[in-house]
Length: 268
Length: 215
Image (cartoon, rainbow over the protein chains, first blue to last red):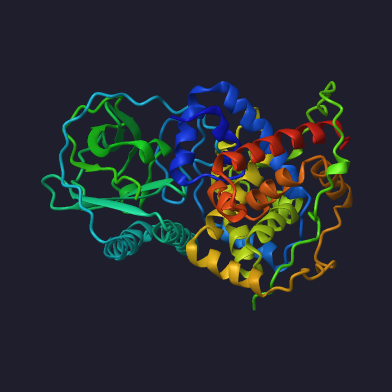
């Protein structure tokens, strides 16, 4: 339950990540609070203007170099395509477009694993390095290098979040495995997979997030799967994250059995 | 080399006498200023790196200012500022002008990233140590470092002077120091509900004051 009063500590980023998540959900259904939020963000922006300080001159070139090759998130209006890791699942707390969760439980497959985070982190980084190499092999060298570097940085930041959570499970019948990595404080959730089954022509992987009924969370190709794929913010509140194989373009509901399914770790 | 940042002495004791309680007056919002940066953001969304340079030039002092203000550490503030622009680059396609101004959008990213950084226990402790070591009266800010944004500063300072001291303190601890409302309550040894009320009232009053003050 979130009451309207929570919007005020939310505006100053004064809530815990759990509380902020509750407000995010509330904002999706309360236009009065969404309006109030947008209004108050102008006030906090003014508070910031009053303490402006020039950064060192060298920062400009550092910043411009840092964005080289960094992928951008798809706009909200475009179809739910997955983007590579680093794309924030939520960039600003005014996403009044998330859907209300359903309550129909879904049979679960796969084994949620709560391996020690550091161990998983090491494995994930290793998988990323290898996957990154395979994918970037065909890319222009410097673009590939900076993109890989940006992804590594983004993943490192995610993995080093104080509240990072991971859950791993096997990929059905391929011998592969996948790991869900998420941080509620960073509002990011990504999937890292290796050994996904080979796809016939005209098929893609599709990710799903489910509180009850699974909701589409974007499609991705085997090439994209060599990089971490980011999930929408709804994954942070979901109970289950799954992958199925679907016709190109994706499906509205899963049409095949999940090849991977993992329970979303709760907050500490 | 980590230079310690000294907060500008902008928020000294707020004077209750300065509070002007005229009741609600007709609020005339400034006309939606042509949000030039929104156009810049849409170029960024289209993958135009030169537009990011334009965004940086227009906003870097605001972003760096709030980040260094919350973190009080130059080296970390530089890292976080860089993260802010990388995120602005990534997330620009999600910017929706209908939901707020580009400045508010970017500031949200900047403040949140600074707060995320400061709110890890280690860094919090390091900062508390620095606070403990600084002289009681504080050190004068390096004025060369402060951007001359005197008009905006005066405007906000005047608006803040319309808050009660308790409201101003709660807001300053929460926003400028990046503390959660629970931490503010602990720090002030006040009930959580009281602190939440003060933050709410501070924001609301500030909004009214800023609306009434000409840009």
